[in-house]
Image (cartoon, rainbow, N blue to C red; front, top):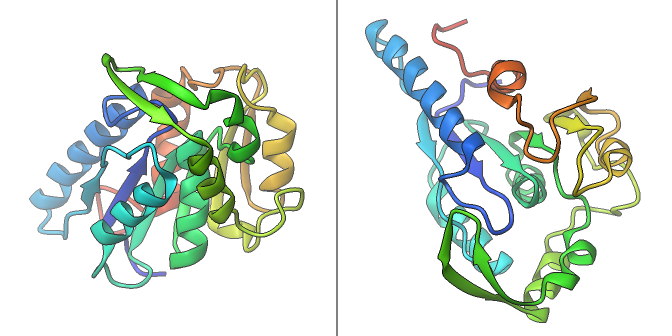
Length: 212
């Protein structure tokens, strides 16, 4: 498999590129970039856009962002709803994806959120989540959500059994056959992501300081 040239991070619902996991992933990639440059190696470009509330618009924005990336050279990290998006993109673009407590059925789970909401990292920023957005989520589903995702080997899923938002059993069943890291603690936020999971995520995606 070719070495990655672009790493795309997809944040969760009501989140942003300012999330803790996005920031630590970007910082670690920057440190790796510095080492790679010192060795004269090609850098891996960091992509972490702010996703709009509309799933259709979010995916259109991301697909435009990665247009022109060579086949097989895009890798993804997706957290929560971003994990659902990453599954759609990995399936469509034939890419590898690391998923952090990935949402399995957000159209079902987010129906109760229809209305005016605020962003976690900017409470002054309000947006409308609509029934049409729920419909758009259905359009991004990959296969039967009650079955394991197709081509499960292209996914690493980090799943916390004490996730207070999503059912860890549903996540594990959805990505059965893939690379699973099922851990007892960390919650939906995966509070130990930086210390216990980030290196495994980057290793799975093929991002290293050297050419190995």
